Image (cartoon, rainbow, N blue to C red; front, side, top):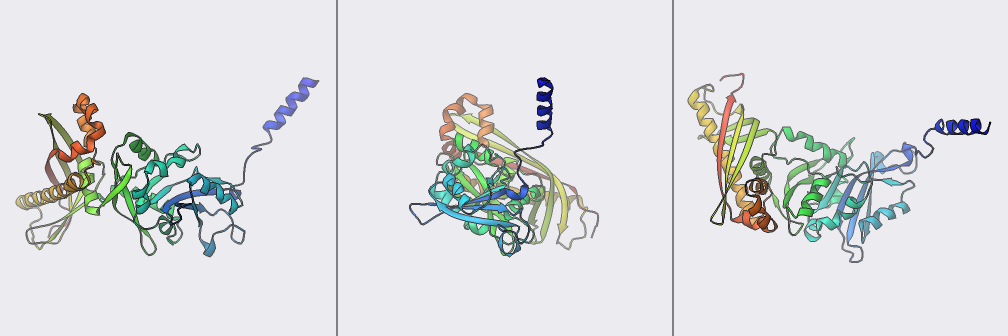
Length: 375
């Protein structure tokens, strides 16, 4: 009899559902983080937490002016202490497992070791390694306060990087886990830069992080980001705009491209042979020439497009090697594969070796289609 009673009690427990569940409206879901510097020496970090509004209108806790998010900016001496202090302002627990974007202000990223700024997020067993990490020359709190109709700024920024197939002027999304790996190995890398405009946020260039310093050391322009994508082969597709001999605008749409980097190490000198091959279409032609399908005309366009890419990568390499002395195009990987023993002795000072390396780029652009309409 006692056994039957025990079985019934256990069965009833299984039928009770999730006894420790919480209503979604009783949880503060964190969507974005913003990191700025404070003028308060005792509390040097200004941390903005962006929370998705889950309450109905008219209920306490809803963001002002009908926004679908609310921002809480707090100054403190540590990120963990700031997050805990949110309990003094919010009626519900804070959950960071839905975090989408982390925005770090330029001044803050130039002053503090990034591994310290991100330490709490990397140690936290709730925060995932998937949030996007970006820089901003503007205060991160301002970027997170952009009034984008019907959008949460953190989610909006994350979604922008889905357009990588449309342009080479945007870097692939860099996630928190990848940033952590680069910081741990002291590998130099780039992070996208975002800029607040009137009612939107725009990706504008990228910030360069020096591996040994683990700090932001400078920025790349939109065109230099395009050069990074050509050199690294990490981009997917996009457009290349150039001029013909009469200064007419020609637009070439890249369908596919591939970058091969061949290292050579001889007599203590490193050299790289970079081969870039692309195929695509002419999608816009502002010239008044009526021979779009002429073989000579297409050959001229291929040459001009190749020259444009060579100019892009040359300018980008000059910035990386001469100004920043950082390898953010991953030439180290091709050298490591080709010369594993030598790389082991060089890896701690790899940026310096990269800065002195000879790089020769060969670009071949193929026009496989000139469009459906012939002038």
